[in-house]
Picture 1: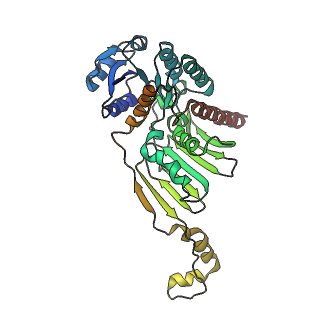
Picture 2: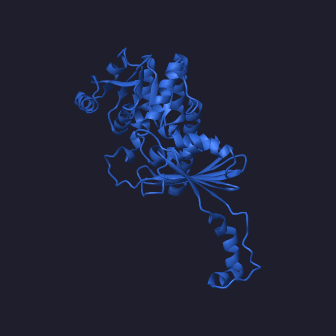
Picture 3: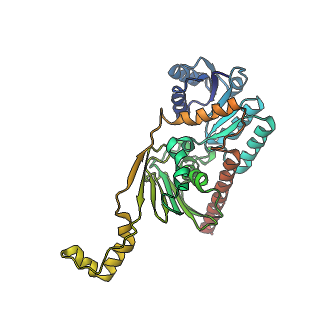
Length: 361
């Protein structure tokens, strides 16, 4: 299998980005695109020089020359589209969220395994070089034993009733659109939580939320997402010896910095001239300085870990590697973890439903 031929279901923003990502992979070819509207398929094919275009998804999956299908349709359609491809014998790379819930994910995963076909959630953040390097950095003990993790992703989006993000019937809401990034990263680095608590602000959909994961070894993760405001969209990993910051944007980072906490407490027995010294003589001020400020005064060391293309190429390359090796899953984004994440999302939304019920009683 020298060149791997891709077929696309969907022609929206994600499909456009993924098509651009494929252009830097010499062994990848975007062979065909399918849409419910033939004019949309034609426009996409002209933009990205796609040889074949189909007026239906059913036609596309019957193309015998397609080696794998990338699904970039609205969230609501992911389960249906995955099953269509798998039943036609096509391996699948499906945009995140993989499905709307764990029940749907189980159906798709069981079918893929029964058919012996490759299947993967397209969580492109996982495959970015910097993200791939984080587990190794942490395992080296650079920041000591990890105790806390904080991650957020928020973009202020003006309300539009026609925008899928504000349509509950299309799988809208901040959780599925943005919150899945920090949640997936927490799973990648720390695994499944032992306890989950969350709060949400509602409109027609979940508009913003904060979620806390607790782990058996006393680690805590605080995860936030929002459609109401722009957030830093970065990651903080806090250990016993220092702090690792993954700089924005969370979904495609290229810079991290590491700060080491000071092990030397200021010598408060020596009186120095100046107003700073006078302030430190005040017990409360000295306590704040020594215990809260001084650990962060060391200059952080920065690392640039660049990526090629627009970043979507890394998940595509991984999928193609698995196809060539005859592997039905990737270890970077395994199907069991995709299922566990969706099960966690179900738990979170159940908590929100209970909160809404209590609020209306």
